[in-house]
Image 1 (tube, rainbow, N blue to C red):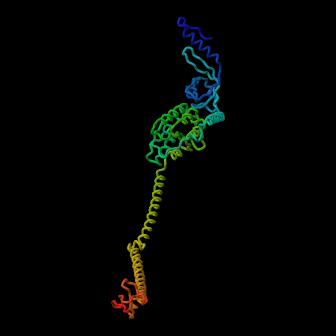
Image 2: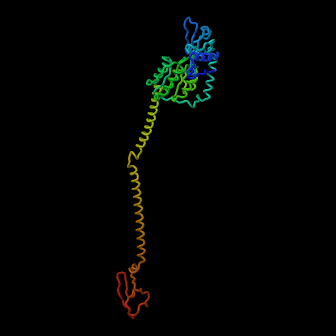
Image 3: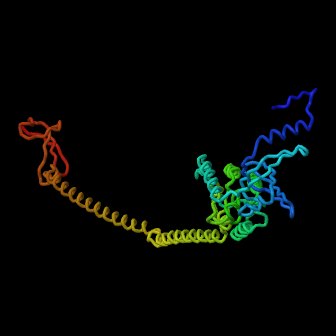
Length: 402
């Protein structure tokens, strides 16, 4: 029952503490699943203290148990391990603290972990987080490569050294975080979000070396997976080896089988690119030389054509044609004129032969009256009338005698 208190009738601290203690005691023993964030075991002490952390939220519980309970765990209990604890809540009224007294601790088996991961994978796949259409392409040459890795890890050296061997000028923005244990999820998630917010970072590589399924659990955490899915920057997952496949590999834009493979994927090989540039330059040079040779050959052939060797050859050949035509036209005209002259002479001779003057030349005369009429009959001239007599060389007058 709730305590009935007022400002005038407040409850004493001991009363509230005992009420809380009673409420908690009624909860009874419960089974709790979590990750061992801290394990405190002092030599010779009968009690062992655990901090049990929720892997999905920033919450934890304090658990105490006898050393026999911890020693009964197989495999031996260690920090970072996922366990199921059967414990009863206890409230210490004197200190106002809550803890759990564990009677049994069971490490979560590999089969159970795999089943949980499969269920989580199916849930995220149903939401479309693994859809290939969501994946972003990697830039050809990133300005800055964001690197999330363990502190001083071999994975960091593999990525950095191989990337700089391929492209010496590559720049890294490295965030060293815990990649195993209770802080791994929160630190990796924070590092990814921090790098995603930097405008110069063009690609983010999340990497760590290989390990057991339990070691790689942080990279299958739902919170981390959703944070990577929300990134605007392309993310490369390089977790473990080829056989390792955390859920982060499925949501990342590119999966690298190893940290070395991630270095090959994020930056180009300068030697190969220079070889490619050299090949392209050689191809361009060959194409240009071929084109120049072809055009030069065309120019040579054009230069050796008669019209270019002697630009006046067309004029000369046409001049000969003109001279020939002129000569032909002159001969044709001369022939025409000659024939015409002959025709004129023939016509003149005929006209002259038929002319009255020719008749007069032969001794004939033309007699005309005074009015010019030709006298054809003697009766046409009256007696005593004057007539004109025209001969070959002149004319004279005569009178008809009666």
